[in-house]
Image (cartoon, rainbow, N blue to C red; front, top):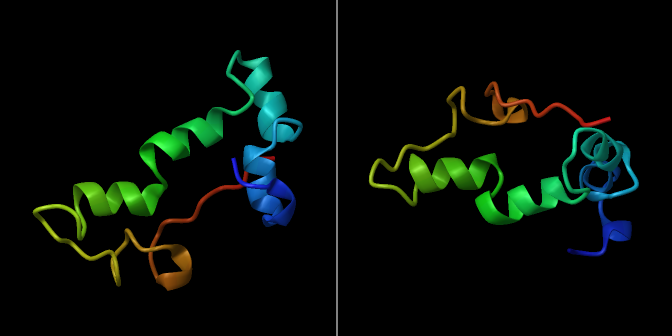
Length: 83
């Protein structure tokens, strides 16, 4: 895993075993690095979209200007923070 000290606070919260995400994971029986493993194996939303519907697929659908774009780009994709 990349050095977390140099990452934004939201990334540190998601990937750090001693964060709220790590505490929540232990309470429900998940490994403390559950989020890292999932994103490492599957990818983030953009990667999954590109692979299945976007540029890397036979459909070639662009997210730009659609509901699948990030909210800062006019879409509806607004990730909720883990706290």
